Amino acid sequence: MADMILELTGKHFKRQYLLYVVQLSHRGNAYYYVGQTGDTRIITARPVFRRLAAHLEDRKSTQNQVYQYIAHNILNVPENEGKKIAFTEKTRQKVEEYLINCTIKMHAYHLEPFISEVSSEEHHAKRRNTLKMEKLIIRALHKNGKNVMNSKSTSDAIYIDCPFPEVLRRVKKDFALK
Image 1 (tube, rainbow, N blue to C red):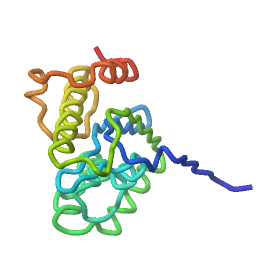
Image 2: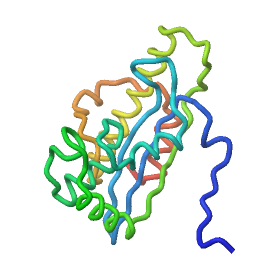
Image 3: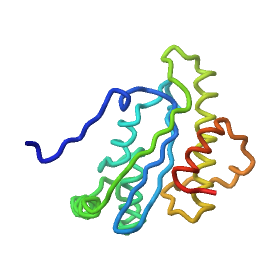
Image 4: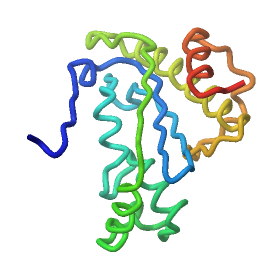
């Protein structure tokens, strides 16, 4: 019998416009990262599994915000590691030791289907809506005193119309947000 089984189904590999919340729990502390799918440079929206895998990448990257938050904000690794230079083996070991004592959950919320033949204008409009949702959820987590890993400012989120009010309601319920 296997020591571990990681089970993924087809829906984890389906491209779609999503809002997601990564919840990192470590010895009674919880941290949250809010993200969305829909690429800024090319017309695509990555699947939820690929986003989570990218967030935990231990190489120099702009996509591994969760890994970088752990390294820089929790373990106090120098800021240039993982951004200007690669993470050192010592840092990788420290992050691994931290993650061994963590539980990570990714809550994904479907916003709109991704259709590969979508026009550039439609893609960017859908992406803007996913970005609005991301800002609204980040702001709600901050307002409720949660530890938010996102570094983006959300000061304008109070002026944003919510494009997906039912999803906002579900997220607030899932994370006990007011």
